[in-house]
Image 1 (cartoon, rainbow, N blue to C red):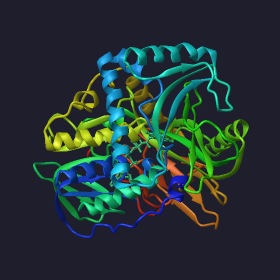
Image 2 (cartoon, rainbow, N blue to C red; image 1 turned 60 degrees about the horizontal axis):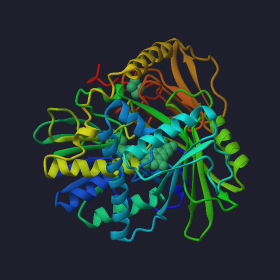
Image 3 (cartoon, protein in one colour; image 1 turned 30 degrees about the horizontal axis):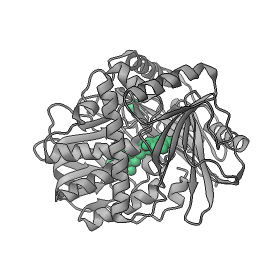
Amino acid sequence: MNKSYWMLSSKSNDYKSLKNDIDTDCLIVGAGIAGLTTAYLLAKENKKVVIVDADKVGFGASGRNTGKVTSQHGLIYDSIKKKYSSQKAKLYYEANEEGLDLVQNIIKEHNINCNFKLVPSFIYTQEDKYVEQLKKEYETCKELKIPCEYYDKIKGIPIETKGALCFKKQGQFNPKKYLDSLAKINIDMGVEIYENTPIVDVEVGKECKVKCANGNIITTKNLILASCNAWYDGLMLYFSKEEASRSYLLCSKLDEDILDGNYINVEQPVRTFRTYEDDNGEKYIIAGGQDHKTGKCNNEMENYKIITDFTKKNFATGEIICKWSTQDYISFDNIPYMGRINMKENNVYIITGTSKWGLSNASIGAVLIKDLIVKGSSKYEDLFNPSRLKSYLNSRFVGENLEVAYDYIKGKLISGNSDLPKKNEGKIVNLYGKRYGAYRDKDGELFIVDITCTHLGCELRFNSGEKSWDCPCHGSRFDYKGNILNGPALKPLKRYGDGKNDVNPKLI
Ligand SMILES: Cc1cc2nc3c(=O)[nH]c(=O)nc-3n(C[C@H](O)[C@H](O)[C@H](O)COP(=O)(O)OP(=O)(O)OC[C@H]3O[C@@H](n4cnc5c(N)ncnc54)[C@H](O)[C@@H]3O)c2cc1C
Ligand code: FES
């Protein structure tokens, strides 16, 4: 996968993988913002904490995002007020402000250098038809007593707007520097971190037995899934209640002074950008957008071109340092699922559905889970309750799941090519009457894998931007060798000659 600017600009530590069976109070699966913050808070409560990650610290969405830590999440407040109530909308604001405060306090207490800055955050529109929605959001924010301002134009940026809603004193930082420091702080507090340790199964009980890919067993009193997606879902079918969505970002040098801030538009296609200044005072812009459902894009490389054109057209840019893409899981009411995984497994907790705003949301999710483990309750329990029915019993849920059924069938009908791919190309091929995914690397080596998704059996599609096989049904992704990049799938793809893929037997 392409590395983000944040990954290139922060020095990762290496943590060893787990090579034996162990016991702990709290096992956290995932070393992103959700997992590292939960570990930090639990360690402060003197819990014995272990974190495992299939990859490395901060190599998931947390190290690849735009780095805005804010309570301004698009047009969320009017939407929560309409769907639930004004009280819930206000509580969502308070939760995310508390998430932002927590990040700031951790940075201050431990003197973390992660280029954190307080800046204004703007949602803007360039089209007349969205002005009314933006004004409605402003009215709702005022009613909820959220400090904010409405402007027709944003002074200090070279983009013409028809309207903009501003929250002042919001955060922006280099998320990977924050996570790398938080990992070290965790280690100093006695937390154990194991990288390159994928989890492949769990037996839930008073003590959960969690199985690593290499066969080692971790016995834990509390299991926390901070894995972005729900690879174990306690029969709650999370995969049908959230949608995997990818977006594209770039980092470019900025050769002009613009108003420091976080910016995102209301309309489609999404355009998001923010300013950044490194330790040497060099200025950059991080910009992107082009969101789409995972596995549902015919030309990923084109998206990089579109965001490059957007950035160059609107800003005085210098060298483009890097481009990358990543994904997050969007709940159907845009409120994350955070808390007990279901109503009966009282020692299994989850943070998922962070809906592209996980830096503040997952930080408060960590507080919520710490409180559930330590005190048994939290004031945010109800708001983020993963078992809430209203989040998905709606037309979007029905529509999305009908689309999944359609993609399942459509995938099976796509026939493969008879010729093999050229260098740097990936395609579906027919070999002896069976379909496979084939990719040829730049040196000419050919990689052929079975492309039936190991989660629930949908057919994968080639992602030309990342050279990966992506699932249009629930967002699992695999590299061209068949290794898992994103769940909920738990098993890799089999290489040609090794037989058919194993589809998750616990789900079908
Ligand atoms: C393009 C883009 C821009 C974004 N910008 C912002 C932003 O500006 N502000 C904001 O608040 N949010 C933003 N987000 C969202 C934010 O990045 C995520 O919500 C957040 O990082 C989720 O954190 P996490 O810790 O839950 O997941 P992750 O950071 O993805 O961590 C999960 C970890 O779990 C590990 N894992 C998964 N399965 C297993 C397994 N079976 N065994 C072991 N380990 C496993 C993974 O390897 C990974 O390291 C953005 C998202 C996208 C896609
Ligand atoms: S992710 Fe569910 S079938 Fe592929």
